[in-house]
Figure 1 (spheres, helix red, strand yellow):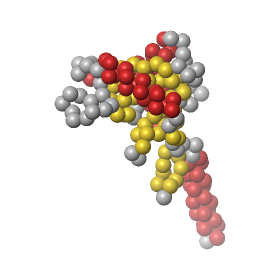
Figure 2 (cartoon, protein in one colour; figure 1 turned 90 degrees about the horizontal axis):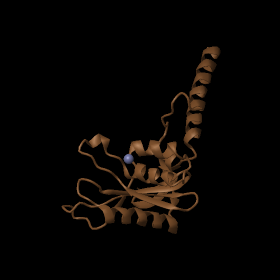
Figure 3 (tube, rainbow, N blue to C red; figure 1 turned 180 degrees about the vertical axis):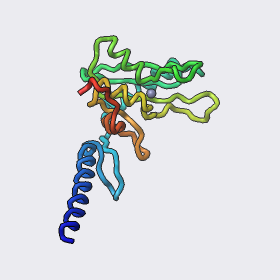
Figure 4 (cartoon, protein in one colour; figure 1 turned 135 degrees about the vertical axis):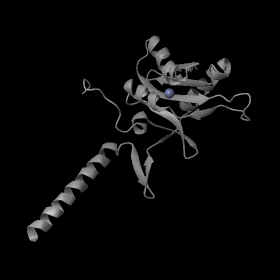
Length: 181
Ligand SMILES: [Zn+2]
């Protein structure tokens, strides 16, 4: 009986430790508040608001119904900002997101290290909305942004506030191919 009990205890402890280890893998990006797992976020700085402004400006200038309604801007570690619009397509799944366009524009100009990125949506004429609003990156963009910089911050709206968080916080168990270490 004693042996059985201790075996049960050890197995429970192992499960408990395994759970703890899993938590430790993501602890950098989350914290518990009021019993709820919350994203670790930071307040925006002036340059982040400027980044949002750049994303708004590029889509306000280039909005075309059915063609472009998302603007994105990325700030590189050297402080340069590159902004681009998304490309809509008749075949929806071949549309290219604004974030991909902004990253591509930056890289094409020789800037490969990223600090922060944001995307905004532009209202359509039939919508009763006056201003652009920040949108979170789609799942594919979370993969793409993290492929090109795991330290990149993403500006999102979280609990009704504009904040930034590390892209990896938005992508637990990110895809990696076998050839990556
Ligand atoms: Zn996307």
